Length: 321
Ligand code: XMP
Image (cartoon, rainbow, N blue to C red; front, side, top):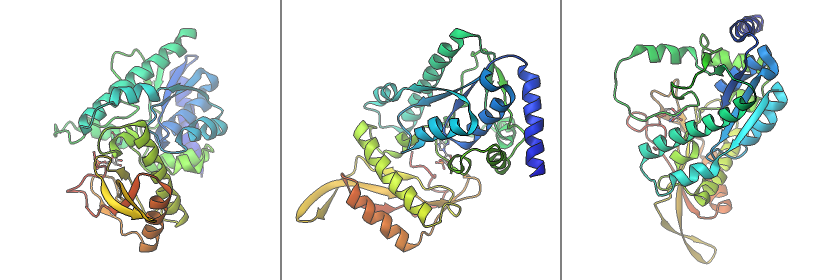
């Protein structure tokens, strides 16, 4: 539309003005905000932008490919992937406490990002860091109401202050729906533009218990089935998001064929919400729930039970950790 096109033109001009002939980096998370911010900066300064994608090994099936293949194909952006799954798994070994997991992932993320940035800057200095800060984030962080932390959120934006970059924040005056329109107009793939929220710490906070390679594989397989079935039932726009949780420290007895099983439960947590501050559990059609349950118990080894979370927020948060 005209307004979206003019937002793009104005923003690109402002980025050119700010960055001049300097160089910039931008961390990609797989989410819509960082992707749209990067696409705008790419349009403004081309190859003087390098995108950095830290693969922490805690992503869902297909998400790395979405960044490495689809985002790059749509934008032509220069991408540096840091393969850091081993670093994160090693740091998370033996850890079960949710806040502990979040702190470790946040810390390792910064280290991995700094290492990647140092490598990129070794060629030529980088003066600018692109961040996908939205208007509501700007307002929220200016509020300073001093409330207690319920969960320490980790975002690609959570970088230390001693990094000597000037920030470029092309989405600072936009709301989420405007960001999606800009992304679509820039030709980003629908899977990125319409992606539902997914937490920075990824699948690590959806495994209740220690995070291991095998448990990640189990949860990734179950999650892929849930997303596939919700999409093919046409429910994506009705659901805010649907975390899929692996109760790795719980076992229950089951029976399959002639055999007794002793496996883990998978929890479905579909929620409806306007802004994630409050949420209601989504009344999914029973036939969809049945297909999901049958497929998960048939196709995912180690899982012999599927349960539904029917708790609103409050009292339950959307994520289990
Ligand atoms: P909760 O669990 O607090 O989640 O009800 C509210 C929303 O925030 C998302 N979430 C996160 N997003 N980094 C993020 O970028 C995080 O560490 C994080 N933790 C939770 C969650 O998926 C929901 O949309």
